[in-house]
Length: 358
Image (cartoon, rainbow, N blue to C red; front, side, top):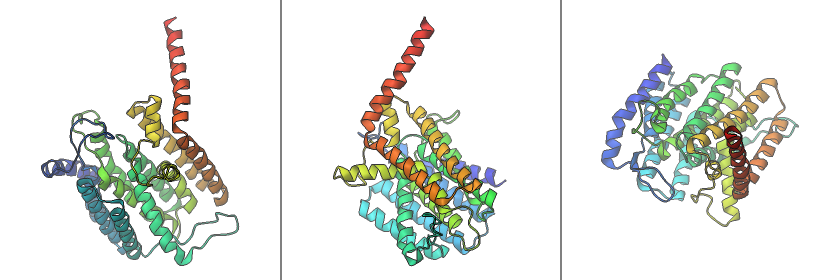
């Protein structure tokens, strides 16, 4: 019942909001970095949030923590809408995100206090240092999903992978907020149908916009924090959270390192993200989406399996750092990797075609 309600609420929100967005000019127009055709309404995120809000009010107990989440989510969506419409400066965005993060921590009465047994000597208690650390983590999650939103369906697919992972771990280990990730997943599906132009939705494309990617990132970090820093019982360890948001997090970190080395702003837009690398190799946007999604699912499974079988936190951290170093090396040498893979992939394809012809 809740899944169907959330799905229909999202679907109806799209049809209700789309004409208004087109009227006020909340649309994305093509430019040197954006190759789509025509002006596309930036309403995916707004429709997802509206559906989550309605579904949460109808189906979930409105305790202080959830009310705080919904209120702060409204603020982050509003920030995203204004950014979509007016292109705010980086300083304004980061300052507003930090304020919303502090408000959320106060409302939920929670922040990242415990990092788990990352060094093998017992749990690391952050104390009050956890407050600024949590602000940084919230800003990082928001912008990680914002940065990964570069081709059709990618931010949606990454978010579904993450929310599904949270749902599985909450279900297995007895988390108290299991219904919320389920609602969010159901509200994302209609957006993906329009964004990817599946059967019956062609020529009706919409984009998620900054409002959507920011809301997704904020929802992810809120659920991760509530699942790993619970006063009662944690659904999973903090290091597992790294694995279930691995691709957005690694992509953001690697790109920031690359930009800083070049003396550029960490938030400067470019075409060096993972999906750009795949498309330079010769992948279509749809094949890049599928490949990156499978990679994200694989990394999330590592985290889930490690959590369920009790792999030590320090070992999971070492493995994650190793995976990030490998990922970062590929991104740092994106052109070389693209050239190598293009030669291997397309040479093999040409050989197979030649054999078939013979």
